[in-house]
Length: 91
Image (tube, rainbow, N blue to C red; front, side, top):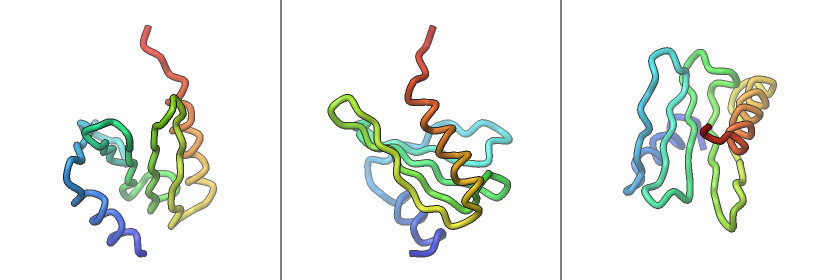
């Protein structure tokens, strides 16, 4: 499925909440209202654009999958960034 079609289907889901978008961030985050799934959808200028990633949480584990429509190196950079957020804790 093409990037534009897939991103439109994702953002049209009921119970999907957009995260606040920081100026200059080349991607958007969305999460389901039950917290079980989150999506990252890139914008022009993001590493790996176009790309879509989804994280699901179950049983205390977070799994990341996605579609690399663009540059694989940039996609892997985004994947590493999302994986680093799994271990982030607030101090």
